[in-house]
Image (tube, rainbow, N blue to C red; front, side, top):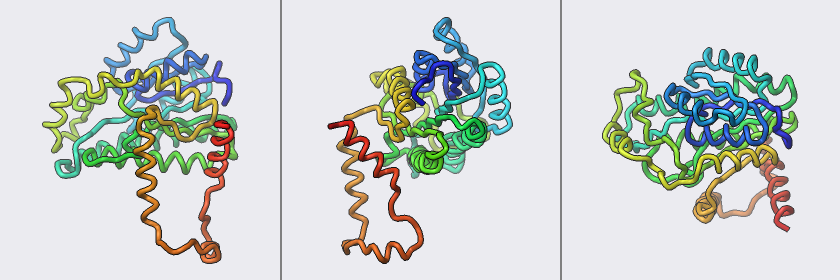
Length: 299
């Protein structure tokens, strides 16, 4: 999708942090933007910040509410026109480790960080397919590709978004629907305010001490400005770029992790005849095309 001018975008978690950065960058590119967010205070603040900067519509939305999502989609399209760009950005930064997490911590994290993305896809993908146009941006995390100890539920959810995005990219490539998975590094957001978002039904947490400590100050006060992340997203949409990292300083660490993954294969040489007998593909040609195109751009 080279030209975003006049297109309509729908951004979840769009009233603060990376979501707001996306909304501003999309508006810079000429798009109309529906900003959906669960926090009314963030919506009010975004309305003040964006006054006169573009065409926006604001909707309060809990992304785990499927009926609410469908209603929000209808409202956005009634006000701004058919949605061509979906940014599944809403998420909760539940950062405690498996040793202290309880069922409620896992359930809440997965319901928002995975379930909310699924709800966005199920709501908007049929509409995009009917119009044969669209682009889906799913916000993951650098932690999905460079996981560390701690934050087990969060990393699980964000790693799932990478796999989901890869599957969507492969499935929708011939349909003219683009997919990008955003894997941001440290960014100046409100991720530290996770305790303010926790619903009552998930109050049986083992992470209260951690969340109380996080609430004292921004986690990445010196991180990348969200608008810069948003501008990178706009570039990725235009290029139909699947993988998008915001911080080059993690490159070596990710390469090391990928090399470590390769150590898990058997030492014997690949047997192509045996591979063919499995009846399932052993290569995705889209990945080869992606690497070839990247090499061509560097030359």
